[in-house]
Image 1 (cartoon, rainbow, N blue to C red):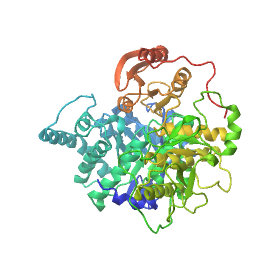
Image 2 (cartoon, helix red, strand yellow):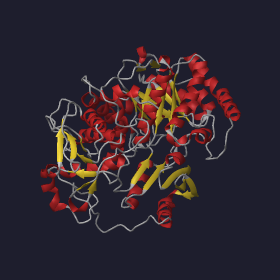
Image 3 (tube, helix red, strand yellow):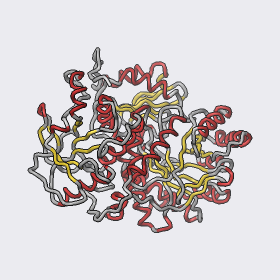
Image 4 (tube, one colour):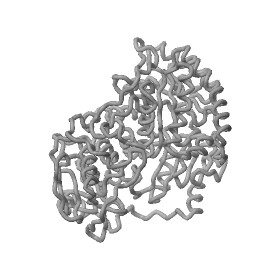
Length: 598
């Protein structure tokens, strides 16, 4: 698969050209997604769809902080019918924000919802297909028969959306690919893309084009690969396949970890010119998501390269498949190796080392692993020729260049690949200190976008975070970025969905309770899911899962396999701990955590 069409946009910013998708009446509060219009911010309600008053209030709260599209789950026809009441109440309060119905499993609910809302989101993985993790070999004839059955189920919705002037999102989730797609393509980006394209072809046969795509995953690397592959595939299909895309990292979690994952996935794609509407999915109250959307959009012009380059060498990585760049190994202090297959190391400045060193406990998981000023290091301008010493030296981009860091390091990796150099690369989140110190939340998003984007490309053997002014916080942020992008594990990893009307327990409360009991389990990944819509699939790379099965009842998983059913919620956290212990992953917490004060 040739990456040539992506080369230019991954070096020099050019927003992907798309057709416009109209959601509602733009003259009366509607929005236009795509074209030359600004990126649209959206979020989702967390309350029961049958609770009209709560839905209205949460919508008003979201609009008050700048949300431009509000999504509401409609798990049943009854819920979908209540959207009429919710929309009527909102319009009576002069709230004209377009409403999106979120549909899983029920085509009938989608048909009902389309009568009342401006946009419908369907998931190809469960709209007409099943998800039983069944293994079956499909002949070509059987596969075509299944596509015919899907077309029969989906065509009425496409026709109704066309008739009523509704918009549609064809939203594929990594966690809910159908058994049919899984058996043909596997759990792959190609499977996600093809799942969406099947439904798009049906829309097009009906002459319906007011739709867009999404390719969401909880793993930022997978999410980036999927969107790149989708947009590449659409470009290959022809100029009239230029549909907009919605960006999101699903089940990102809460707090700084959720923001870091979202910055890696959403921020990097926006910087590469991909994305027309976004949602930051946090396990928090929905209004907290919108300021993060604002910050990710606002930082894009500064992080994206709009300067022409005299030369754009071939990409030094495959944009569709992750593979870490080959490099030689260099010895750091204390017997640590860096480069090759060694773990990606965390470097600090001399000033940071002097502050942090006295506070580091022996054996601490979060600690500096090298000092910037003491490294064997060559700093270069990758836009022109440069000379390299023997292999036992790092290479990095010199400070002060008039070039954004993401482009500079991609160009550096390409130059090294061009001469067959295995020198390990030290990544920096910025090429010199900003004119004014950044607020901590902005430093977090920028550092995660820059370093996370490059690590997802397979570039980098060590990282240096300088945008965060606090030395302890900068060190913690560096480790958190490595964990979020899947390059390192120094603490428990949580995959937690953001809650919606389908959720069967209080996600924020339960997530906090689980963290109190398990956050000392380094290297263990726990998924916390409010319902089964994406649960089993998104838990495919988790060690254990805690999933709402029914009101007040929890199902526990090992990987994507359910092993305990209908556990009373009051007992479920204890039973989760027992399950972790049964599988040899439990260790008792130490009296004091081995971390440094930040």
